[in-house]
Amino acid sequence: MQSRVHNYAHYVYGRDYVLEPVEQTSTCRAFYMTGHGRGIRPNDYIVLQNDQCTIQYKVEQVDYYCDASNLWIALLTLSN
Image (tube, rainbow, N blue to C red):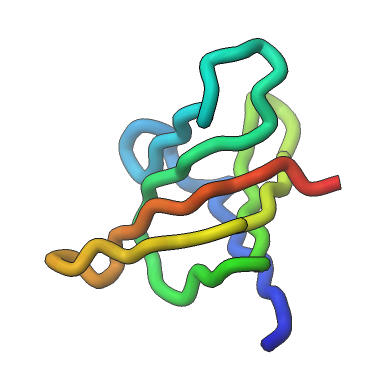
């Protein structure tokens, strides 16, 4: 299956999604993202807005919540 790009740049941090670093270091390049939507799969990409720039992350793994089928948590890494 081909990778897809999901544009979350227009979503609001803290309301529509949350990012948490995997490790609390200044050079952390992996994050857990909790968000909503359907169709997010491993090897897809998520685009987020950070101040004035956009950043693309690769979805390494994703799990959907069983009690809310459009709510998920994903492991993201910075894509090159």
